[in-house]
Each structure stands twice: as structure tokens, then as C-alpha cells.
Length: 453
Ligand code: GAL
Image (tube, rainbow, N blue to C red; front, side, top):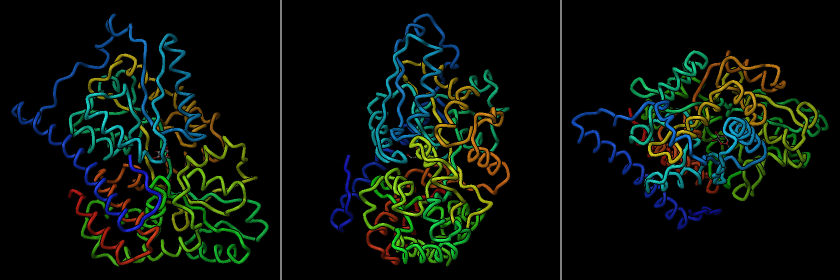
């Protein structure tokens, strides 16, 4: 796996070639699915036994469970461990293989997963975002088992919001179990730095620039941004797009690709990003999202804009909400909730299928979600949580999700297909180093060709 930290033009070409290769693998997966469908004389999915039909004595003897994810950081790793604990209580003799590939937003993990799936070596279950990342990459390619019977048996469709159920279904069948909902558009700030400088968290984009100027004058880095895992600047941009376009028009950007060329608000959002980056640390290509968040609780930077897995990170680090750090919607997005959801599915050919099904039951259970989410910094995918186990930020987030205007995250798999997301991300990472507005605009227009209308 190539890990570049610079964005020189020759290196950029190499990265672009790498993306093309990765996409080619994705296309190969989709083509083999079409081929299978064609051989079967239609678009019928390959028949698979219902999940619970696998409870045979042979299956019961399975002694392992391999779970694949990118949850290695404080907070997210704690949430995963909490799910494992529940699984262990239910299947005491089973050894859990915690197959993690580090790298925020799964940039590295997703490439490894493609190789494993293509090589016929799937894990028993893997982390995948609800939405196009699940459907476009794996379901349409015929790589996942439908799990309708499990949904029926566990009553999940009655306790999960329709918005979410729509993102995990294809042609009337369910394909993964959502374990949470994260919010992408959050601003986290250092309470003391703000108090010392007599500042309030910025509500609008203009507020942000005013606050950032004051912080800069006071010698504090206003905005802490990562870049090591190649999703951090693309993530910041989706939140700024939301601020500039509002939820309805932001969402249209992914169904009407011509808007990237015709709508002047794209230029406005690029301009805003450029200004945001002028208030950010310059060493971002060396920093993960967690490193960037750490600077906020250390007080060496004032703010970071990141999904609420940062909240899980902060509480793991012992930083007290309301004392060490505070939160607000990212500037210009009050009343808007950019959502994404982590889920787990059942790949065809899972070596320990029976254990995988038990794992999915844990993921979808109230017990599992109420153990996982308070540590992860996310809210449950279920609408019937035990609210007493969630703290102030998470209760706020549960209520915001119920009331705010929702918009799907592009960087975290909900809004668009993987091919688009890769090209979009590449454009923003090039911009992070070059700050060439004309170039990023044309790269974003080119990326939009990957959007299927
Ligand atoms: C997101 C994922 C989160 C968190 C984050 C940082 O894509 O949905 O659960 O892991 O990446 O890696």
C-alpha cells in the first residue's frame, strides 16, 4: 500500500495511477457480478441459504470469528472491544481475530479488503459504511449475503430509522447491520483557549474567520487539520459545502453532477476552504485526525472540525467535555446533521458464518449498541436506546439527529459511490498542498463524471 506524505506533481501521478488500479479492481468485482447475473439468465441474485438455517452442528463447532475494521484509535477501539466482550459472553469458546488496518476513514483498510475479497479470502464480517460504499462496492458485485431473515427475527426494521434502512437495502433486501450513526459536521474547541481570548464558538463562516483572526493574532493555531490518511481535508470540505449549499442543494451535488461545473457556489466553497486552510497548521500531511484532535485538548491549537469519533477520542484521553473542550456544529451548519453510519455485513464465503451471524446479532442488539456507542462517540442506530448510558454530548446528538435536516457524508460512504469518493478525495488532497483553486475545480468536475445519474 503506497503511503505518500507529500504531493509533488510526479508523486501525484503515481497516486492517480494507484487510484485507477484500485478502481479497476472495483470494476472487476462489478463485472464478475454482471457476468454471474448474465449466466443465470437475468439479474437474479445467487440463491443463498437463510442466515439462521446455518445453525448446524458442524457450524456450531466453529472456533473463530474474524472481524475486519479500521478502528485502532482511542475511543473507536474501545467501542469495538465493548462489542467483543458481549460476543465473548455469548460464545465463550470462540477466539476473536481483531483484523484491523489502521488509517482514518478506512483509506488503507478498504484497499486491503478489496484484495482479500477478490482473492476469495473474506473476513467473517467487515466494517462498511451504510450507503453507496456498501451497495455500490459490495452488494451490486454480488459479494454479500442478504440478511432479511435476520432482520425479521431480530425485529430490527421496526427500531431503525427509515433513512438508514434505505441505505442498507437493495432490491428489497437488507445487506448489513448498522451499529451507529456518526455526525460529520462538528467543531471541537479548547475551552481555556477560547475563554482566555474572550471568544465564543463560531456559528457562521464569518464568525469563524473573525475568531480565527483573533486567535492567530494571539499566537495560537486557530484550526488543527490532519492529512496523513487522506480523508481529513476532503472531510473538512464536505462540511464547508454543506454550509455554503445547505442540506438540500448539497445533496443534489451527488445526483446532478453538472452542478459542479455550473453552480457558482462550488467556487465559493473552494474559496472558503482556501481561507480555512490559511488558518490551519502546515504540517497536516504528517498528522492523523487523532493527532489533530490531540492538539485541541493540549491547547496548542484552538479548534478542529471532525466527525464525533473525535468525541470518543477525547473521553478516552480523560478530557472532560465542557471543561477541557466544547463542541458546536461546524460553522454555518447549525440545524444540519451530516450523517454516516458504520455497519457490518455477511460476506459470501465467510469462513465462520455461524459466528458471523451471532456477531451481527450483537451489533444490532440494544445491549451491543448501548455498550459500543458511548465509547465510540456515536449515537445508536436503534431508536430505542437506554438514554441513561449516554452522556450530555450524545444525548444532544440523538436529539439533533431526530430534528435537524439530514445530509449524507460523501467521504464516509453515504452519499456517493467509492469511485467518485476516491477522485473527490484526491482532488482535495492535491489542493491541500497546491492551493490551486482552478485545478481543484477542474478535478472536482472530472470526479463528478463518476457519479451515476
Ligand atoms: C469513519 C468511520 C468512523 C471512524 C472514522 C475515523 O469513516 O465511520 O467510525 O472510524 O472513520 O477513522
